[in-house]
Structures are given as C-alpha cells and as structure tokens.
Image 1: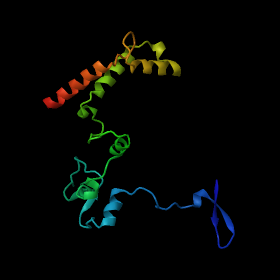
Image 2: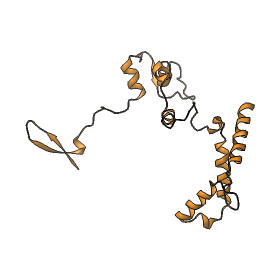
Image 3: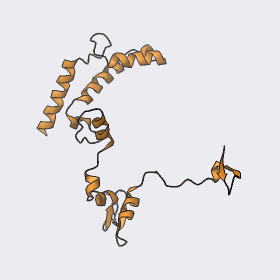
Image 4: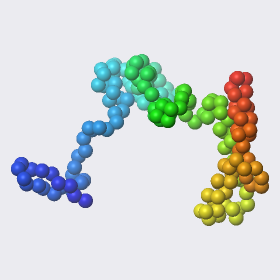
Length: 170
C-alpha cells in the first residue's frame, strides 16, 4: 500500500507505508514517560516495571507505579470501569481485577452453576455452532428443568448472600 507525501508546491510523491515513521502524537504514554516529563525520575535510583521477589538485587529498586501513586491526579483518576458505570448511571466502587468474590454479588457461584450444567450436558449438544450456542443459552437461562440453568432471581440472591457471608467471615 502507498500513501502520498506532499512536496513543495503541488508535487506529490508516492511513498510505501513501510517508509512512513509514525510519531507519538495522540498515543498513550507509559509510566516511565510520564515520570520523566514530570521530573520525578532520580538518576541515582534504578526503576523497574515490577519488582521480582526472587531478585537478589532488590535493594535500591523502585517500581514506577509506586512513584505514580504519590501523584494526586493519578490517585483521583477514574478507571475505565468507573467511567463506563458513570455513563450508564451506575455506581462502581473499586473492585480488584480477577476477584469477583470481593464484590459480594456471588457472580462466581452463578458461573459455577452454569459450568456444572454445561459439563453434565450430552456431547451431542456441544457439537456444532448452533447446538453450542443453544446449550450456553440454556445453561445461563432463568428457566428451571432438565439441562436448564435455573439461575432464578432467588438463586442469584442466595449466591449473593453466600458471598457476602464469606466476606464478613474473613
């Protein structure tokens, strides 16, 4: 593919895309770049993206994120999930990644029930795209019965109650 580079006047020159060097305009910045622009990097300190626990030379190393946590604008910045929730008029309080059990809504129990029903389904219901999609829809459905999810509002409330109970017990 080609793009065109304007020369002086009306002359245009065809240039292959491999020759075009993209700049950094409107590109996301990394933590190191932000710290450098703010003058927060000390040349005497070794900065790393993440500290490794098995590293013997851990002394004197600092994570970029630990320096950024002291910046007020980063402390008050909304996460993408919080921004989306705000646009949908829903409240999103901090929730850690990959730990839905801490939200107290019992979603992991609902997924577990659906997975259990899926695993017990016959192999013939899992073969083929349409069969697979129908089986997944059945596993997540609120209908009760043979090979149905049974994720009724009462069941979901029960799962939420169990999750909150475990949170309080910790």
